Amino acid sequence: MGILRYTAITSLDGYIADGDGRFDWAHPDAEVHAFINDLERGVGTHLYGRRMYEIMASWETEPAIAEGSEIARDYAQIWQAADKIVYSTTLTAPFTSRTSVERRFDPDAVRQLKARSPHDLGIGGAGIAAAAFAAGLVDEVQVVVAPVVVGGGTACLPADVRLDLELVDTRRFDSGMVFLHYRAAGR
Image 1: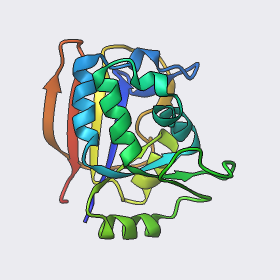
Image 2 (image 1 turned 90 degrees about the horizontal axis):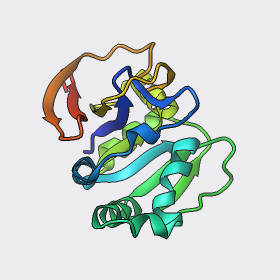
Image 3 (image 1 turned 30 degrees about the horizontal axis):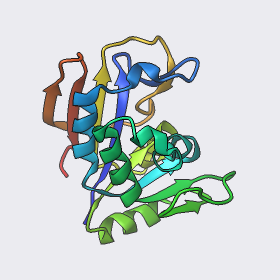
C-alpha cells in the first residue's frame, strides 16, 4: 500500500507562490535539490492540478533544463519515470509520457490507487492538495521552508482543514532552507 505525500517549497509565511504568482525565491540550491531528488525517488505516481502539471512538465518537454547539472538531469529522470495523473476540466490531453487526465478529483479512486500501489504517491499543487486534505487522504506532509517572507499569494496549506501531525524528521541546509517532515497522527 502506498502513502500519499504532499511536498512543497514554501515561504516562511506559508506561501508556495507570491501575490504575483512568482516562486523564483523557492528555487533550491544544489544541496536542497539533491535532497528533494532523494525524497522523490520513492514516488511512483504524481497527482497534479493543471497548473502544477504545466510547470512540472518542463522536466520532460524542455530538455535544456536537465542539461544544467547532474542533479537536474537526475531529477528529470526521476520525474519522467513516474506516472502522472492530472485533474483538469480544461486540459484535453496530456503532453508528457506516462500521464493521464481526469476531469475531476475522485477521493474514492485515490483511496483505491493508494491501496493497490506498491509505491508512494505524491500530490502537488495547492488546489488539488486542498481537496486531498479535505478528503482525509494525505498521510505525510513534507515542506521545505525558504528563508523569505512574501506577504501573500497562494497558501501552501488549506485554511479550512484540521490535521494533527507527528514530526518525523527535520533538516537544516546551508542556504537557510529547512525541511520539515510530518506524518498524520495515528497513521
